[in-house]
Amino acid sequence: MYRLLKKSSADYSIRNKLQLVRGGKEYFDLLISLIDRAEEDIHLQTYIFDDDETGTSVADALKKAAARGVKVYLLADGYASQVMTKKFIHSFSEEGVQFRYFEPLLRSKYFYFGRRMHHKIFVVDAKLALVGGVNVSNRYNDVGSQRAWLDMAVFVEGEIARQLCVLCWKTWRSYPLNMGITPCEETELDFNALYNPSCRVRIRRNDWVRRKNEISRTYVQMMRSATSNITIVCSYFLPGKVIRRALTQAAERGVKITVVTAGPSDVRLSKWAERYLYDWMLRNRIALYEYQPTVLHAKVAVSDGKWLTIGSYNVNDISAYASIELNLDIRNPKLAKEMEHQIAQIIEDDCKLISQEEHLKNRSIFRQLLRWFSYRLIRFIFHTLTFYYKQRG
Image 1 (cartoon, rainbow, N blue to C red):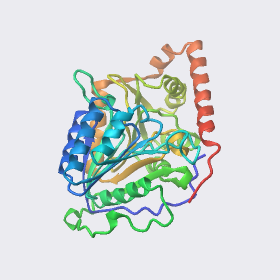
Image 2: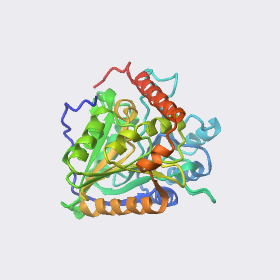
Image 3: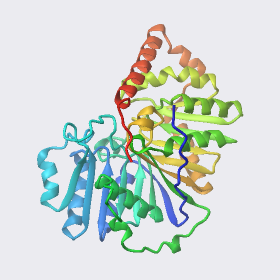
Image 4: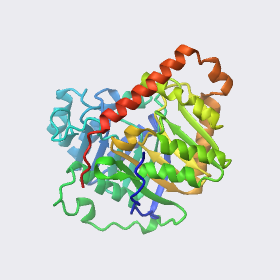
C-alpha cells in the first residue's frame, strides 16, 4: 500500500510563468535554445541520455555553453544511460562539461537496482527550467520521417526553477549531511515581476529510500477530491490497490474518468499486464483509450479543469516505491483546461476507444491467461526490485 502518513511540507509558489510543451521537436528546439541562452550554470538530469543524433546535438550545445564559461552539470542514470560509448563520455570532460552517472551498476555503494534516477530536470541559471517525461534520445524526438514518442513537459520561469536548481545540486552531491547552502541559494533573485496568485505551483517528489511519497499522495488526493472529471495519460498504467480503490470510489460518485494508455509499447510484458486490468477499468465505467501512432510515454493527470500534475511519475509501484521521480503540481484553471483540450485532441486524432465489446472481442482464453501471467510476473518483479530497501534520511 502507499504510505500516505507523512504530510508534505511543500508550499505552493506563486511567482512563476508556465508554458505547456509537447515532446518531440518542440521540446528539443526549446531545450537547445535555453542552453544557448545560459549565462552562469546548467543542470541537466535525465534517465536516458543516448549518443545518437539527438544526444549529440544536445551534447554539442552543452559543450558550447561550457566553452563560453557556463558551468555545466550533466547527471545521467547509471543503468538506463550506460549505452553511451567511452569516447562520447570522455568528450564531456575534455570540453568542460562535468558528467556523472547516478549510482552506476556494480560501482555504487548501495545495491539498489530498482532505485533509478527516473526524473527529467533541466535548469538554466536557477531561473528557467523544463520538467516532464522526455529523455534525451531519438525516440523522444522527431528525427527525419520518424515521429517522436508522445510525451509532455512544462517550461517554468521563476521561483520553482530556483527550487529545482537546489534539488539538482543536492542530487548531484548525493545529499551530504554537511552540504550547507547550494550555489543557487547564495544570490538573492527577484521574481516579483512574475507574481501570479491564480497560478500555484509546487514540486512533488517520490523517492521511497528518502521517505518521499508526495506524487503518490497527489494522485490519491486528486481522485478523492474530484467532483466532475479526471483524465490520466500514462505510459505504464498498473495502479496499486490504493489508487484503484480511489478511482473506483470516484467513479461511484459520478466522476467521469478517462485513461489514455499506450497502444504500441516498448515493454510488451507491461502492456500485456496492463490489459489484464482493462476488465476492472471497464467494469468501473472508466473511458479507456489506446494511443496508436507511436509509443505513448507521457505522464500527466488533470482534474476538474482546475489542476494538473505532470512529470516523470508512472502510475505503478516502480514509481511509487523504487525510482526517483519528480512532478510539478499546477493549480491554474487556464493551464488545466489547455491540457484537457490537448488530450481531447489527441484522443480524437490518434486514439482507439477500447469499449467493452472491443475488449471482449480480443479476449481469448489464451490471451487472458497471458495477461494474467504477465500481471503476476510484473507484480513479482516490482516486489523483487523494492523489498530489500532501507530508508535513509
